[in-house]
Figure 1 (cartoon, rainbow over the protein chains, first blue to last red):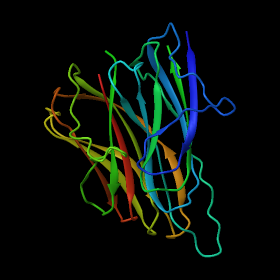
Figure 2 (figure 1 turned 90 degrees about the horizontal axis):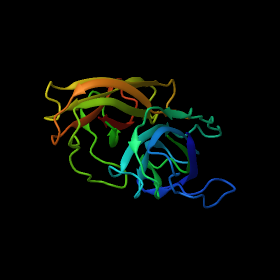
Figure 3 (figure 1 turned 180 degrees about the vertical axis):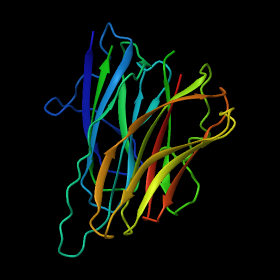
Length: 136
Length: 134
């Protein structure tokens, strides 16, 4: 049986743990792991930054809460970087391809899971992160 | 055996210079990365790296794993490459990659993770490295 949980949020400050607690039009989705599953089997994630400031950074995912049986698990998701344009120029957009992590194999129980993310390194401005957990 | 995920990140700001990745964002001093008890293998490495494009150069990134947690010695793994023709306007992002491994580990002992920018100096390279144990 496959069940999913998708959450998203803005991570706009470097080196700051930020909870991903929204789901677009659903502002407060349930963070309870579904009944009848025992593992996080896959993770799908995507990250974008607005390149408002120069530097380079990585984004990490923190999975915790009482649902995660062996303590907080921390996984790197993506990396980004940018430098200022010439005067009078516009910067090209960047697209970060979706990260799909299979065979994740993290033990969970039907309890509350916390999904946090961070932009670590330089502060690149604003970033948006979306994460889908696929349980099995 | 279920998997356990341990992560460190950091920046390499000088070319051909071994730089230890010691932080975890909001945790500025997470302490040594110890091999979890009850595991025998480093099964995977998940790595992300990106340049800040501050110089018109080209470089590659590599990850060094060292320490007493690796009884058969260090491992060195490629982690991307970057290049640009001008030192203005660069902007990119890339997802992490999972690299399958089969490396013996010693539970309770430390693994040190280093990132290096090699080749030419592009300014700065950020590295994020997750070690997956089972």
